Image (cartoon, rainbow, N blue to C red):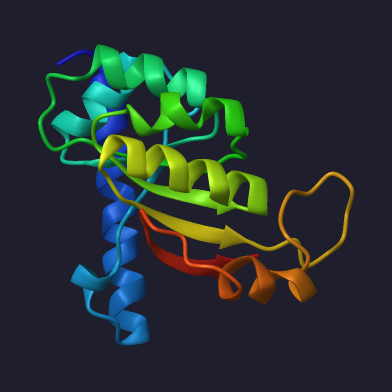
Length: 168
């Protein structure tokens, strides 16, 4: 094992130990907590090292980086990916082609919901999503305004989108 892989394994073990400690202190079952390792900006080799140490879920914030890493790591059978960044409608098709894609964190507009619906239907698949809400109104933040959130989800069915929850 390389020094870099050993460092990743050690850091992952420390984070997992801290999670167990926090679960115990809060009365939560450890199995109810999922650890998402954010791998943005890291090479595929670092993801592979974390995978070897037991990590299975990884988050990326750019579709291009996610697509490239997923292709390089396609030999890892139970690797799971989540897109944690904003998604442009012209990247939906690329995103949905990623093996192991399990969650989109950033549904924030009708146009994106429409494109997700079209591509999910075309590919015969479903995708879990989180509704991203901009609770601050800052220009640098993404998300649907709180007042428009219910309309985005409530006024229409989104076939192919299995679950919508809210994040701020």
